[in-house]
Length: 76
Image (cartoon, rainbow, N blue to C red; front, side, top):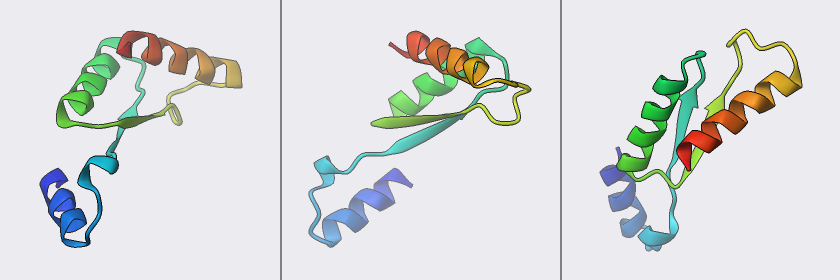
């Protein structure tokens, strides 16, 4: 899919190097899985990443933010 997007961008006259790719990780309560998913997106060339914490059993905004902090810390 990334190659197809690159070809399409080049055909449209777009600067391929200026186009990013966003990955998405679904938090399921497994920190190791999230870290592996982040690493896989990084290896695929993702320049941005969304972390979905919905439907993970988290109740408060603070719980969601804490998960995002953990994922970000593991990704750096």
